Length: 274
Ligand SMILES: N[C@@H](CCC(=O)N[C@@H](CS)C(=O)NCC(=O)O)C(=O)O
Ligand SMILES: *[C@@H]1O[C@H](CO)[C@@H](O)[C@H](O)[C@H]1NC(C)=O
Image 1 (cartoon, rainbow, N blue to C red):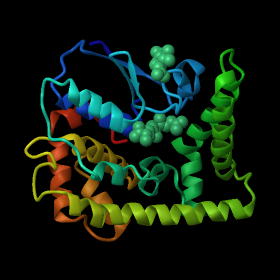
Image 2 (image 1 turned 30 degrees about the vertical axis):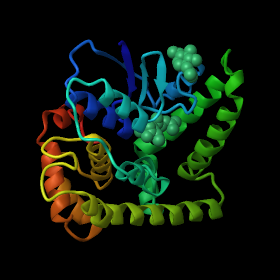
Image 3 (image 1 turned 180 degrees about the horizontal axis):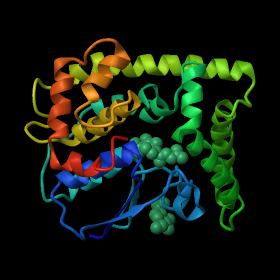
């Protein structure tokens, strides 16, 4: 059956679906891949919200159905795949909790120095372009059914944008720093404690080859590596150690080695860690 997968090169959860596609033995032409530019807020177009009312990636259209989260997308990809892999576990939900959100891990700033650095980088650009796209699309013909969506998003994104541009009240900024510190600590303990608790000594949760859990964990861990400043497979363990003050546990190091050796990982992250 025809499948269309919507992704974006910088998206962590789209990458989880891309890892799945690359591992599951689909042939060229089985899946049409379309890019939705999140930095330009193309996901906020009414035409995209008609497919996925949450406006998020990955999104998959298959068999007349729309799959609108990475968990659903990957499950649907696995169901029809030529290659069979091990079914996932509760670990997927654990790593999708808001407390471990890899997108906020990228945006967070724990103090003024970090905020200044992030504001000048992609985070600042991302927030301002998105706000402009929200304003634009909210005025599109066809935007009417999504009015509530635009209002909520404008509020959330606008709040973050105000912090990044120095326009937020002091107490909002202090709250953002506090949330950021909490989030950083939660992610750190996930890398140092929760993840090793879920991983085997070698290979993948799915066995010799990645399974359903691994598509999610591989993308999550790669994004977290990027947030610590890692630029490649080779410098990530040192970057983790520098960020967390201790080397990553042996199981995490082994897992990183297992994923980064795979052609699928090399393909998905050819343009850099994200
Ligand atoms: N729970 C969703 C989260 C997806 C998600 O947050 N995707 C991000 C990219 S990694 C996105 O599309 N963000 C766009 C936005 O929130 O405006 C899933 O697992 O698919
Ligand atoms: C799925 O997406 C199509 C657009 O391709 C849309 O017309 C349809 O209403 C969507 N289905 C559901 C159930 O949201």
